[in-house]
Length: 206
Ligand SMILES: C[S@@+](CC[C@H](N)C(=O)[O-])C[C@H]1O[C@@H](n2cnc3c(N)ncnc32)[C@H](O)[C@@H]1O
Picture 1: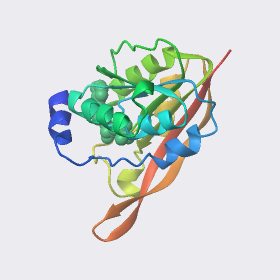
Picture 2: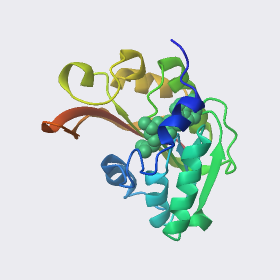
Picture 3: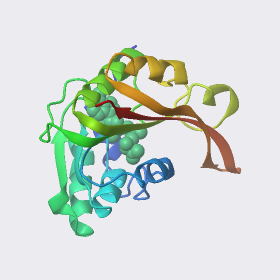
């Protein structure tokens, strides 16, 4: 499978509007609201809807994405809403990044729909930067969405399962608190349709 490049994403982001809106993801809100604000990495954070929401909750967030166009939009958005001083941006690949913040209390990864071997590398790399007692939270269009839902990519290789995500974290010093399918909804021309999402919340031991 050909690797999706940053050019591909830059072109998608070269529009005036926000491709994924400025509205924070509802699963990010649900799972991250109870956590005490500290430092966070939003891996593949794109235009930064979730980074900026975290910053508004008091987090210092580093959005790491390989699309410079997305990160420019994110930085402008952070300035616009007055949280620029808490919003760092790093242009890098999710599998090889070196963050500006070496240790964080939260590693967030939202909708990085990339082939399994790459996703596993990204999750494990992110996990290494989470402090003991810190959390890793991820959300993806699930493999189950192919048969039972609408929207999201239609290539099974970029759609993780619960089993895959649990295995990706094995041996990395995390306790999985929750890893399961959740019902989401997406807007289609025919109205709201079901979309199956997979979420992962884990805590680093120690
Ligand atoms: C579906 S968007 C999700 C953006 C954001 N997390 C959100 O929920 O709004 C996927 C993002 O992953 C980024 N991405 C894809 N592959 C990547 C890679 N190998 N390294 C870094 N970023 C990557 C893209 O640039 C894009 O911003």
